[in-house]
Image (cartoon, rainbow, N blue to C red; front, side):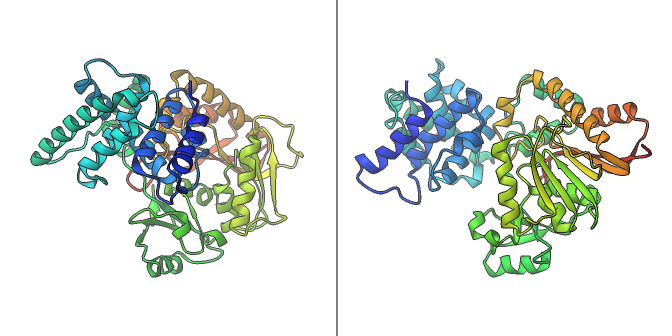
Length: 452
């Protein structure tokens, strides 16, 4: 059986060795479909899509990521069409290839490729892998029927399926119970491509200055002024996403890519010069960097994963924020072993969670989570919160964050914490923020340690 790593090396050999041409900047659509279908297979076997995509070359990743993300976002719709036009369920490899191709039809007026191109390239893709070689005729027939169906729909006006995003039954039940009026809007929003949102490094430029730089580069943007009643002085949303390499002075630290919901964290914690701050579970370092952009505070960035730890330093270096005031520490936030005993003025606790609020940016998440994960994550969250509280000075503040929209990881945890610790005074914070066109879903609770 051919492994994922073999498919990648085989694909590159196919392009360079058999066709005797160097890898081009733009990967042919047929090859991108083949690799994207393989990536889907890896996700269905439980691998993170990010981990899979990290194996791709720079010229391969953009188109493969786009195809795979869209296939996952449009999963429910594509599976219904496969069932409609394929009487007997095809093998996974063929089903995944069809899913990638059908997703290209599900953009309505925003469809990137012509119908004949999608069909022809998908059929060609079948010939690039021995497990789909047999399926050329079937794929051709199915996609032509799909195209005819969508041509008929187009004459009546295209209406996207509001719940095309796949959710396991337990996930969908949770959304329905927790958000009876909003759950369909959540599903629709998370099935859309997430916008590119920037955080301007205020140590280098004001938002207005950087917006002017974008305009000079032909990149249109708009300021995002507030979210959940909290000012966002550094947030810009681009009218159309561009590669970070196109962003002016990105590599010299003028700007970071960060969702507007995530930008609330540093603002709510309100760092000041002289504070000793712990950013628990800090990787990849976006919130650590934002804290340092706002104030020259002594900061400890804690992360248990050694591979992710390196990303914190890389981000701080790019943003020119890596000074002797910052310590990057490997350690478990639910344990004391890494701590020197000096209590913190402020703690930012971005706790491990289901990530159910950031599905628009990571559409593989619903395929990877299990119902049993939630109880395990709750225990981990409570363990870290309890430990962090002991590391906080009297009158210090702790900001609890999850990128989840499940109440079990948000408001339920905040209530548990307030009940367990009588000296935890709950301060004003947004609470649950649901996904919209300009932000992911987050939960925020802020506590003051009222006494020892």
